[in-house]
Length: 313
Ligand code: MLT
Image 1 (cartoon, helix red, strand yellow):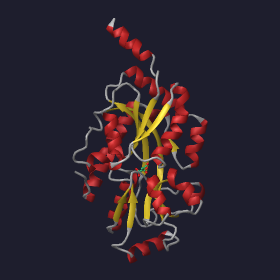
Image 2 (cartoon, helix red, strand yellow; image 1 turned 90 degrees about the vertical axis):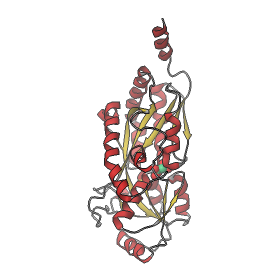
Image 3 (cartoon, rainbow, N blue to C red; image 1 turned 60 degrees about the vertical axis):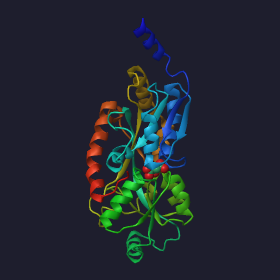
Image 4 (cartoon, rainbow, N blue to C red; image 1 turned 180 degrees about the vertical axis):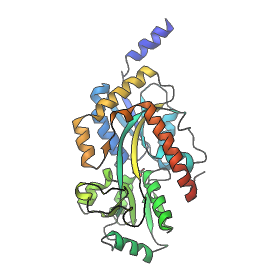
C-alpha cells in the first residue's frame, strides 16, 4: 500500500505553483531566459510558474538554496555555465555540482559581446585596445560576481591581454548594465540576450564578440576576439534546468517532457532567436547528456580558472 500511495501522491504533480530559482538579479540574461521559458512551460507542465531571483556570490547562493530544497519538484534551478566554473572558484562551495542535483536538460547556448559605456572614446576594437593600453591601472570591468558568465569571460580576456583591471561585481548583469549605461564602469563581457537591444539602441558601445564565428544580424559587423588577435578565444554561455537530488523519477520525467515541449514553443523560439540565443536540439535536453556535458565543462574550465589564479574562500 505504501508504494502505491507514494506513486499516487506523485501522480497529482504538479498541484501547486512551481518555483524556478534564478541565481542572479532580475533584469539580467539568466532572468530573461527563465521568464521566457516559464511562459512556454506553463501549459506543458500544467502549472503556475513563479520566478524567484536569489542573487549573490556569482550564482552560488541561488544554487545552494535549490540544492537544499525539498526534492518534490516544486523548487527548480535555472542556471548557466557558472555550474561548471564555481567548483574551481569556490573552496567552500556548499553543494557538490554532480551529486546534489537532478539534471533536467540543457536549454540554449548564448554568445557574448564586449560592450562599453557610451562615453568611452573608442569606436572600434583596435581603438579599444589602444584605450586599454593608455588606461592601464584605471580600468573598471563589471561582472556578476565570481562564478558568473561575465566573470569567466572577463577573466579570460584580462589574462589573455595580460592587463589587470579592477572588477566591479554586481548581483547580476541587469544592474551592471544600468551602471555601464550610466558610465559608472568602463566595460563588460555580457550575453547577447542582455546586450542586443542596448547595442541596437546605442545605449552602449560594442567592440567584439566572444565566439569563433561572427554572429548574424546587427551583430555581424563586430569582429570576433579570435580574429582580432586572441586566437582561439571562444566563450559561449549555456543554460540548464536542475532539481534537488532525489526528486522522484515520475516528477523528473514530467518536468523533462514539459521542457522538451517548451523548447519547441514558437514564441519562445522567436524570442530566443531575436536575442542571439540558440536553443539546443532534443538529445541535449536529456538528463544523462546534460550531466555529462556539465562534467566535461567542469573539467574544461577548472584548469583555465586555476591558471588565472582566482578563487573565493
Ligand atoms: C552572468 O554574467 O553570469 C549573467 O549575466 C548574470 C545575470 O544573468 O545577471
